[in-house]
Each structure stands twice: as C-alpha cells, then as structure tokens.
Length: 497
Image (cartoon, rainbow, N blue to C red):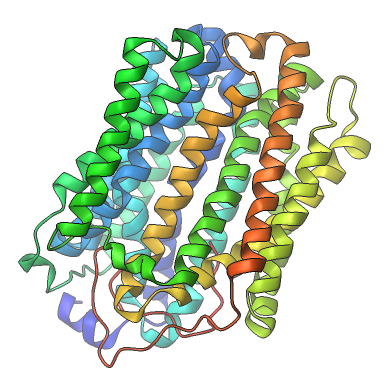
C-alpha cells in the first residue's frame, strides 16, 4: 500500500496490518528498553573480567543513557523529515552493530564507547516507534495502540534483569549484548515488509537543530564526567573543573540556542504550561529514584546478599507481574478521579518500598526481607506511571502535543543519567567499593535513603502542583512536530509509559 493510501485510510487496531505494525514497534523499542536494564545484573561480572571500578560500572550504564538522552529529540525530527520507518530501521541496525561491539569489548573504554553508540541507535528507534504508531493508526485507535506499546515495552524493561541473570549464569555477560542481534534482524524484517512509511510534509522547510543536539550532548557529557570522575581524580583536578565548566556552559548555550532558534528541537515555550513543567519535574524525581535504585540493587544482591546472577535478576520479577496485572486498571482509575492523587500517592508508596530495600543485607531471606520491599516498590510504580504519562501529554498545549512525549522521554533518561552519576557518590560508593561487601552494604543503605527522599519529593510536588483539570486546549487543525506526528491524544485517554 502506498504512503498516501495509508495516510488517508489509516491502520485499524486488531487488523493483520495493525498487529504487524504494533509488533515491529514494540519489538524495536523493547530491545532498547531491555538493554537499559538487562546490563545491570551483569555489572559484577563485567567489572571482574574487565577490571572496572565503580566509575567504570557507572559509565557502562551512562555511556548509553548519555547519547540517548541528548539525541532522542533529534532522532524524532530526523524521522519526520526522512521517513519514520526508514530512520527506525536504521536505528535498529545501528543498535545491533553497536551491540556486537559491546559483546566483543576487550576493555572498559571500548565497552563504554560501544554503549554510547548503542544510545545513538536507541535515540533513532525509540521516538520513531511511537511516531509510527501515531502516524499509522486511525485517530480513534491510537490510544489503544500506544497503551499496548507502552505496556509491553515496560514489561521488556522490567524482565531485563531476569533475562540478564539467565544469560550470565548460563554463558557470559557478553550474551547480554549479543542477544540483540537476532531480535534486531527480526524487527528489520517485519518493519521493512509490513510498516507503512510516513513523513511530515512540513519538515522539509525546517532546519535541523544540529547546534542544539551538539550542545546538549556536550553539556550532559561534561557534567556527567565531572560527577563520576571527581571522587577518583579529585574535585579540584583541572580535568574535572574543565569538564564541569564546559558542561555547564554548553547547557547554558543549549538554552540560548533553543530560545532563539527558528526551529528548535525543544521549543522552550512548551514549559509555559505550569502543569507540563510540574509533571516533568515529577518525572525527573521519580525516574531518578528508579534508575539509581536499579543500578545498585542487583549488584547489592550479588555482592552482599550472595545471590547468583539468575537469583538477583529474578528478585525483581514481581514488579513485572504487577505492571502486567494492574497498569491498565491504574490508568482507568486515574482517568476517573484525575491524576493528582495517584501521582502524589504512587511516589510515596515507592519511597516506602525503597526504605524497606535499605534494610536488605547479609543473610537476608527473599520471602521475608526482599519480596515485601519489591512488592511495595512495584505497587508505587504501577500507581504512578500511567497517570504521569497521561498528565504530561494532556498538560501540553495542543500545538506541542507532538513533542510532549519526546520531551518527557528525554527528561526520564536525563534523570537516570544524573542519578547513576550522583547517588553512588553521595552514598560513598566509589573506587572498588563493590568488591567489599561491608562497604557496599553501608553505601547501598544510604543510596536507598537518598532515592526514597527523591521519590517522596516527587509525590509532594505532584500534590502541590498537579491539577485534575489537565485537558489542553484543542486546535482546529492538528500540527506535526519533531518527535511525533499526529493530533494530540484525546483528553482523558489512558496512556502508559
């Protein structure tokens, strides 16, 4: 079917074509989401084999998050201009090649560089997958398609630690990355055959915001480098000071470029909506707490409690079960009563789970000590995620509906990037701390406390700032923007991250 026919007729949810489109986008974004978490359980083995210290493990995660957070908005605009399916497929292939390089890494610098390349691929395919759904499905089916995409993608991220444990126990940490190759091949085959190509006709007249992308990458990279390396090199080291200054100056330059540019990838007037700004601040707090915890938890379970990689990965499986069973109902509840109460209560429940996790130590039993904390943590996540995403999309002005999801995605990734850099340092987990169980146990307890405070702050902020009346004004004609093409979701539609 030609591109114009798809644009006029649209794809219906539940039809064979609709199922193929959903399969390709879910698998593509799922591979990226899976790799964001599957690596965590392999960190002790990576550190042992490649001789990495704590900063090396931090960079193993943050090399990926850095390029993903910096380039994800640019990836959406490239899809609008050159074809969403084309850029999505290129992103999947890029991601697969980078995964092969990760699996072949012989030292930490090579692994970190390959992880950064993975992030570039993720920045191309992640916004493209959602944009394909928005552009391909008929308006009345888009909410269902996005809900399925979000829910299944979330499951992929949540099942990552378990899958990583299986691969590390059965083979090697390298298979955590090599697994992406057959999955990527399948995605490319399905997308090339069954996904319609769509573009934004207005994109050709817009300039690409290359300057903004470069400044964002340099800014995040400089700040992250300074935060991670300062404990090892010293806060007054010329290299650390230079990185910090360059990073902060680049971030300031990014704001200037986005404010003055004719076609910025991040139009700053989107933040004139108080609700949109507040919802993204809540996102930053919650996803910072989430990322900081998952970075340390599976390492703690192996190095301190004595779990195998498989046991450590399986320990978080109840979170997946809760997301599968209750996410849709949580979204429906928020649709009935509004997002304010769930967005305030969810992070507080999550914080309580984090405080319970801080008590996990040597000799802890799974059923009595770990499972209750995991269940409480997962319940808070279920309560929070769907209302938060729906609130972000509904709070943006209608003319910015296309980039609202992309901005929120970038905020979540940036929160994870900074949390992984900052929280271990604040908790005293530097150098070779992960090799000393007593030191790591004390640091982990401090880290969960910091994460709990961060999550609770998100809940309080939501209660003080989020309104149940979040419907954005509607525009007579839907516009296309860089991250997602298509009209805004219907007010009140249930959406999941």
